[in-house]
Image 1 (cartoon, rainbow, N blue to C red):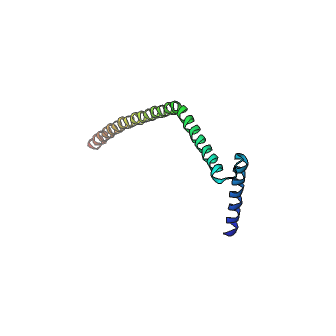
Image 2 (image 1 turned 90 degrees about the vertical axis):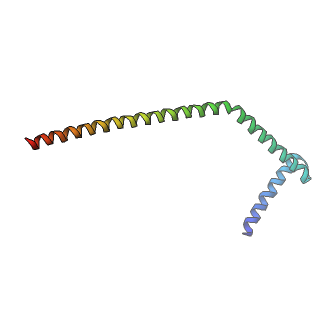
Length: 106
């Protein structure tokens, strides 16, 4: 457990040293300020990119919704076909029973 803390401390120390090198500041508050400002810039960049992609994402969602409707229509049509076939099977079974009844009478 202590070895892992030591490695984590080394990573933290490297990050802090890099922040000091990048910012040229030795004060923790000043180089942390630069780090936070960079995070804000990254978040704003993400929002701008997401906003730009909104129309594309919207179009994709609409296409997927249309595809789902098409698939649902296919399922409905398939179920109707099954109903028609079951009715035909039932009619054939009645015909078969009638033929068997005539055969038994004769």
